[in-house]
Amino acid sequence: MKEPPLSSLRGFVTLHVTGPAVEKFINAVTEAGIVIWEVKPAGNGASLNLLLDDFFSLRPLLKKTGCRVHVTARSGLPFRLARLWRRKLFAGGILLFGVMLLLFCSMVWTVRIEGNQRIASDDLLAAARQEGIYPFQWIWRMDEPDKLSKRLTSRIPGLSWVGVERTGTSITIQVVEADQPEKRPLLSQRHLVSRTDAVVTGIYAEQGRPVVGINSRVKKGQILISGALGDEENIEYVVAKGEVKGLVWHEYNIEVPLKTTSSSYTGERKDRTYLVIGDWAVQLWGYGKSGFSKSRTLTENNMLSWRSLQLPLGVMTEKELEISYASSVKTEEEAREEGIARAKSDILARYGTDSTIKSQKILHEKKDNGKVYMKVLFEVEERIAEELPIVNN
Image (cartoon, rainbow, N blue to C red; front, side, top):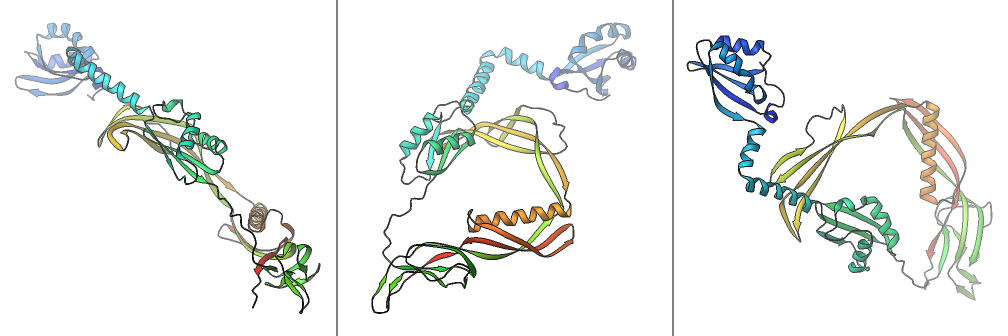
C-alpha cells in the first residue's frame, strides 16, 4: 500500500512481526482498514510501517493470529517532540532563539542617506524620524515605501525625488536634490532667431527690434527680433527679449498593433516564509501549492546586520502573486485614433504644452502583419524663437 499523506507529522513506527501466521496477520490488518506500507520479508517474519494512531488497534489481531510484534524504529514529529520534551532546556533554547531571531528581523537597525550634497544628512534623518523611520523601529509599523517617499519629498524643501528602500533590517533613503538655476546676469547681447522653417503667426518684442511681421515665411536661423538698435553710424547692441510663434509642420510615421496582450495582478497571493542560516533555507510556513495557473514570485530577504556587518541569519519571504492575462483587439479606426493621440502627446511634450495643433492630414495608411501603419502631417502653432549671441568684431 502507499504511504498515507502527512505520515511524518502524524508519526509512524516500523514493526517486525513474527509468529506462526504472519501472512494471516497481515491480511487481517488489511481487512480491518488499517493502513500499512513497505511490507517486506525480514528474517523469520515480516517488516512493515504503521501509523502511530493504529498501533494499539493491533492487539486483538495479534491474539487472534498468535503473532508478536517488535518495534524496530520510531519516526515522525510526535517522537521528535517527545525527545525534545525530555531535553526541555535545549528545546526552550531553540524556541527562544527562533523568537529572538524573528524579533530582530522585524526591527530597523540602520538608516542610511545617499545622494545628498547641499542638504545635511542630520536634517534628512530628522525628517525621516518624524515619518517613523529610525533605528530600532518595528518594520511592520512603517508605511509603504512609496507613501514614505511622497511625504518626505513634500516635507523637505529642495528635493525633487526621494526613494525609500528596505534591504533586510537596513533602510536606505536615496535623494535627488532639485537643480538650482544659476542666477547670473545676461552680459552678452543676442538676437532671437528662428529654430526652424515656419510661418509667423504672432510676435511680441519686449526688448529689441522685430524684423519680421505676421504671416511672414521664415527660414531656420533667420533673425526674428534683432538685438541691434540704431543705424550703421550709431548702433547699440542689447539683449533681445520676446516671444514669437509660428506655424510648423511635423511629419510622423506611426505604427499601432491591432492586438495587444496585457497582464495584471488578481489580488490573490500565497506567502512562504523561510528561516535562512548561511546558504541554507528551512521553510517555516506556507506549505502546499498555490494552485495558480500563472503567477509571479517576488522574494524579500530580511537578513540581520549590525552596522556594516552582514550576519548570515535572517528570514526570507516569497510572495507568489496570481497573474491574469487579457487580450484586446482594436479596429482600424481605434488604432488610427490611438496612433494620432500618441503623436499629439509627443508634439506637446517636445514643443511645449502651449503649442496648438491646427490641423492634421494622413498622407499614407496601410494594414500589414496585424498592424496599422500611417504617415501623418501635423500643422502646429508653437514657439519658434531661440537665442543667438551677437559677436562684435
